[in-house]
Length: 189
Image 1 (cartoon, one colour):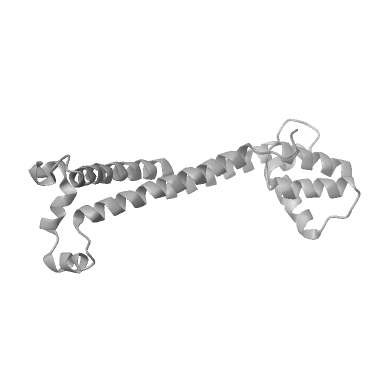
Image 2: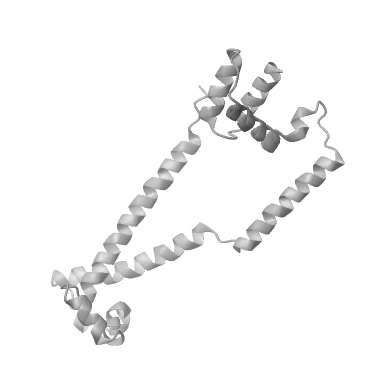
């Protein structure tokens, strides 16, 4: 029984199923002949039934009709979950955020060039800088509240653009760490 469990654990580690660190601990305990904790037993049982299923426990490679039916039910449940979420992908949100960053960046670069006396914002067509037209649309009492902090629309745009650039840097590091962690496997040498 222990040899069979060891094979299951090795198969789970190779397939990168579950917590690799915990599975390595369980593998070491099984190889040393130690008794597993109940929580480790339950964790291992859930992984075996989830990822290896009854087909791995059986000696034959063919699946029974009942196993195929249960797999179809699982696939159907996953599809229903996707349909409920509306197939929302983070890529669409990132693309929208990229567009907004680019849009604010256009305004911020023009503002910074205006401060360097390279270009004059007031001489440009107002349709080239639509955010600056918000001064004319937003009611004066709201603008007076903002202006009391010495913030004008160009300063707000530059601050917002800076915050968005900082957000992109943080997102880049997060995805880089996720990528590195997905490629790291301590069992392979």
